Figure 1 (spheres, rainbow, N blue to C red):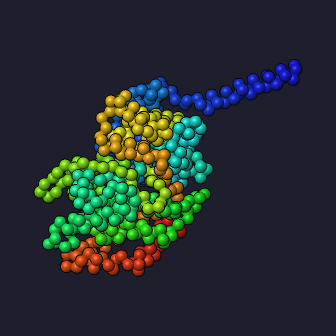
Figure 2 (cartoon, rainbow, N blue to C red; figure 1 turned 60 degrees about the vertical axis):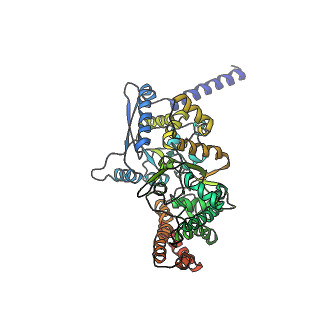
Figure 3 (spheres, rainbow, N blue to C red; figure 1 turned 180 degrees about the horizontal axis):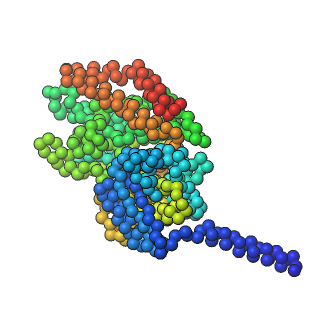
Amino acid sequence: MTATKRLTKHLCLTAALALTLTGCKDKSPLDPKNPVSLTVWHYYNGSQQAAFDSLVEEFNDTVGREKGIYVQGYSQGSVSDLETAVRDSIEGKVGASAMPDIFSSYADTAYEVEQAGALANLSDYLTKEELEKYVDSYMEEGRIASDGTLRIFPTAKSTEIMMINKTDWEPFAAATGASLEDLKTMEGVTATAKAYYEWTDSQTPDVEGDGKAFYGRDAVANYFIIGMQQLGVEIFHVENGQLTLNLPKEELHRLWDNYYVPMVKGYFGAYGSFRSDDVKTGDLLAYTGSTSSAMYFPKQVELDNTSYAIDYIVMMAPVFEGGQSFAVQQGAGMVVSKSDKTHEYAAVEFLKWFTEADNNLQFGCVSGYLPVLKEANSQEKLDQVIAEQQLTVAPKTYDCLTTIFKEMNHLTLYTNKSFANGSAARKILEYHLADKAAQDRAKVAQEISQGKSLEEASKEYVTEEAFEEWYDSFCEALSKAAGK
């Protein structure tokens, strides 16, 4: 046999072996005659749960039937309830349900479960081409394993927007010259809120200090994480699983000036469970919250003895003046419990189907969540899916989604990497300053009711000494929570 023939034979055998090995790797372990049943735990409720259940039913009747997969979804109530149920299952507590095959999870919780060795390696079931179809930062968030492999499958994401009561904004803007342009920066929001407080206070000249708050925000932890990021500081820097806390005083002072100070003076407010509740009661005119909160923005303001319809404005969330265009990346993904190849493979097949552009956008039209495939993040694709599937989409949800789509190319979505004690550290960001602001505002309001002016009543709370005291307390609390 000539050298050329031997080489040709060798190449043919190599190619045949490669095809055989590839076929073995890609061969489905599923048998349509013996369907695999999967349980999914999630925290969706109301219309979101109805939309999810509808998609699950469609999957079971089509692709699931064809491949031999049957999915059952169960709402565990709230995110907290879901996390508790998962922890109880992992710990084997008496009365706890068995671990589900798939469950919704934020990165911090998923990290805890991964440390317990209970999550499947999703990288084993996805090709490089499939991985590249998803928004890069969404996939990066899911790589929480020590070796960088995927553990969280992105299924629906969100970011933050600003929503405004347009009906009550217009007379204020007309009387004072306030502009929506001012609301693009946090400093502009603070200045506008001060003007609104003074304008509403002037409506009742016989009663001093009864001005109304203009603005509030959900998720104060996001304010810290994204606000600092906009100012060039990564508050939680994680490398090789090790956390470094970055807490520079100058940047944190800007966050203090544009949250605590206006809260204490009554320019900002937080009264109900969510800021959309405060718009409904007429206590706020605007707020920053998740895109998924759009469905809860009220159709009317309800006062003690009357109510009236309101319109809305959707804007991008404000950025610190001179800061970079960072926006929060949030929303739970789905994780797969470590079990056997058949169940893990089936779980990933369902998740891939759920995140196909048409299906994911159908869910997003109801939930306000952003789709996770690159091709799905455009108004053109959204409009196509709405037309083809004849979907009815709430205008507020549509406006939130399209507002984000238009800015996607100019935004950097960010979420910090997971680390041990991440949940505890985030709670410090969420409550440490917010609780102090609420308590101090109550004291200021009490002094105003006793005849002091706003400036007199708030003076001691907004000094440099007050900031320094808070800063030291905050750094100590955050370091302790993070285990530093």
